Length: 411
Image (cartoon, rainbow, N blue to C red; front, top):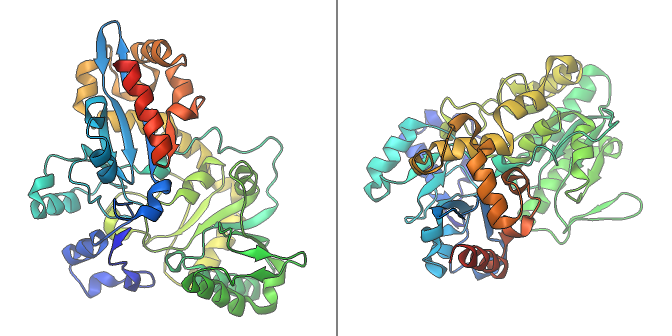
């Protein structure tokens, strides 16, 4: 993770009154949430996602697809990756990747004006394909789904580590206003996603092991809520297998950030049929006209104020029948839509996959036959991680094992 972290954007939705859009784009791209060669402490966090394996079937070879937030370093370690894969780079931020050798960037959103500006500024990247996806879009919509019999027992859920960018104090202010304005205390769960937070048997939270900036965010939340905090549930950590029941139990999921990468929590919430509440200015300059979510999957908060957020909470909580987040998610998102969209941006597949159809690439018969022949698993099962050891790895040792597996398969 390198560059200048734009903290002055975290609480300012009106930066365009101070700077041109080109200056704002430059500020966004001045920081990368990628992992680089000299960041040795982060190497075991590098991910390696294979949504499409390389295949050799009946004397026909087709390249696979891989993407990583450490692609620049991986291509240096394993230069032959490109013989087997189209290699994609992404950054856990709304910037474009800094990797010069990638075949494509997962760019979060489609924003042609921004892309054109960027490629004019960096002509060495003019042949890199920009695809409006990110790793958050690779959410497994069948693992992240409502459990049987789950009931809506929580009004609001927040799934966010207490980073400054997440604006948790604004959520706290909104909850205080909600209680005073609507004369009811909502049922709220905060999942903080940090094993550095300790919770004693009395429910008291200990933030002493946290980064001082993160600790400061929670101290602000405590100060704002005061005695009201005792009515809310704060969980330091929830295992991934348990997270669907929390999302599904909530009437809405809130995201209060103005700028970040493509948020995973709202993807997961919608997949669990929970409406989302997001400020309309979220990633506004990176997105352009690209939507935060599709259809009636939630509400955009009209103003960046705690009261507007409180009012939007009230609207969603009391109008649950107005929203169809999972229906929209299955229509536009999830892994089948992810791979269909991804390959549509890479002409190689329409030219090399028999009976290619962009609308249902995931259901292509040749692809399924080849995947079963090569990996003893159907492509659908591969896509949905029935053999996770050949689809996703984290850390250099595990990544090398996947690379060696595919190298052996295709000689």
